[in-house]
Image (cartoon, rainbow, N blue to C red; front, side, top):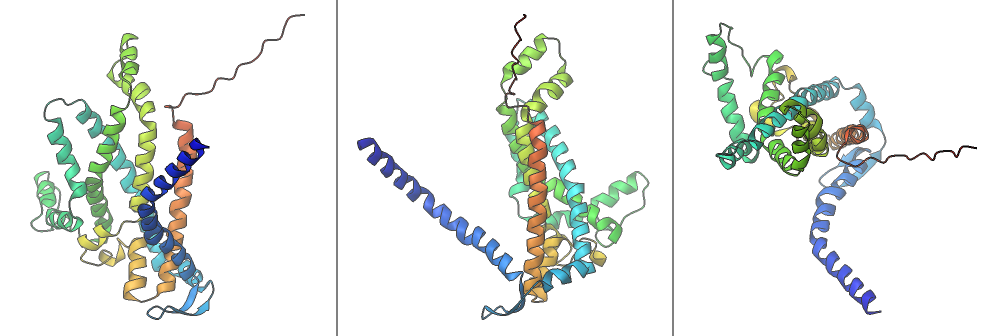
Length: 311
């Protein structure tokens, strides 16, 4: 009886500790999601008075026929495909190098992490100068190797490439820290055993380190995909509040922003947000299902077969 009371009191204490964060999650995450789903069906809605005059699926019908929304979806997919793989590969290479650096390791880790904690506006100002058509460093280096200058920020052909380069640089720091943490959790006995068996550095990395690092890489991948699907700050800051030249950097979140804050089409904005949510959810589920086949850090179950007794 005493143990039951202690368990009950412990549960109450636990709920009291987590209650503030649960309230924050419900108010700022769960409720907005539910509200967005409901608002996506508002075809005639007065936002200031929160009055719904009509409901239906007209918002989704509009989006499926809107060429600007199609462009936003296509640009977002191009951005994700162009940013995520390169960011993870470069982060992995730099993390492995930093992991084996003994001197000034803390300094280098801080330097690589700084872009992640730096304001997007400040970063965008620096990169806007770097990609300046007349005075930028990018065109200076191109001129050194004999390549004609490029109007990075005003040419629709290069606007998305510019955005991808900036985003890769900005996303390295956080990924490096996560991968470094994963590398630190790998038991050194695996690598030592491989060395005893005559494995070289590349074989140890490919057959020992990388499989043991797979859970961390899956988390980094999912986190990167979700974040890149929701890209907005970089577009807004780099292109001065516009979706790039000739809408070449129009992303789904920027489209939602325009529909909600510029055109006051709240239902359409909510419908676009629901579609974005569904896309992220589907991609994340696929990643989780695929990653199960590449998680070598968990022990595998060996099926034992019973030998039949000889007659």
